Image (cartoon, rainbow, N blue to C red; front, side):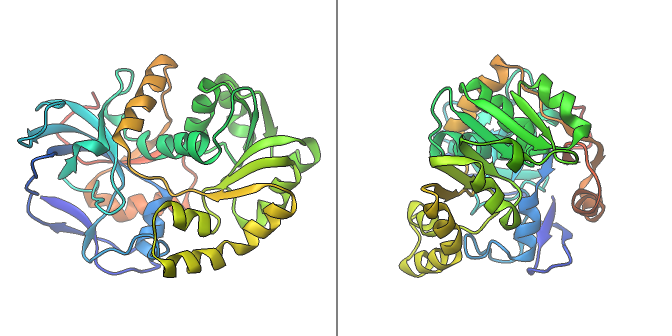
Length: 340
């Protein structure tokens, strides 16, 4: 079968399409014929080696973190899934491989595709959806009726985070591109700030929760709009000691991450704010919960019109990271079937 593989960490996003064996499944796994896989910023971080401290891969490694597909074989202990079921998943970080014709996945990492999504739109959900769900429910432990602000939230993350946050009873404010303002108003945001003509740090105050998508240069401004006792969770700043402890890392890694996140912890603590870092994990049960929200509120993520094949992976990576996109960029792995 075809598989997009990384043979060594590099900054040039150099990957290869290799022919490898179809994987054999274990008793608790299913074999999935991949339909679509999505490209995420995480792909760039993995290829460049920027997440080695969190997960260092044995080379070559098949790339790809989220997918939709159809089950073609089930393990002897699998009882909840059947051949022909359509599934979606954010793969375990230590067993990625969505950019391939087939993949073996443990059933604790998958869920059935929500009925309002097809194999194409469903591929854009798992990673960003779980990131938003885990950030809001676990890291922020957000309470009903409080206010969440997502600076730079008009991309694919915000498209999933906003309806999830609204479904959990939060007031949601987003800053982002004026181009998609109406789209986010339709998703239910309570306030949309045009970053080209408005400065959110001059407009907001007493915010309970912030999800940071912009990074270190924005951190002080984000803290400035928060109330004491609030929580900020970052998708891209440095991980800290709390993150290492939560993931059960070694004492050495706890020390390293403690040093890496020290300046963010310190700045937040000075304002009586709690700083968290999130690296989304695979969780099939949460995908099922997320699926109920997606079906109930008819959440359909945006996918870019430009869809690539496995053989076009280099073009796809360049397009994703160096051009303006309109939603998740997808790889159509199974080129023989339609989107449904």
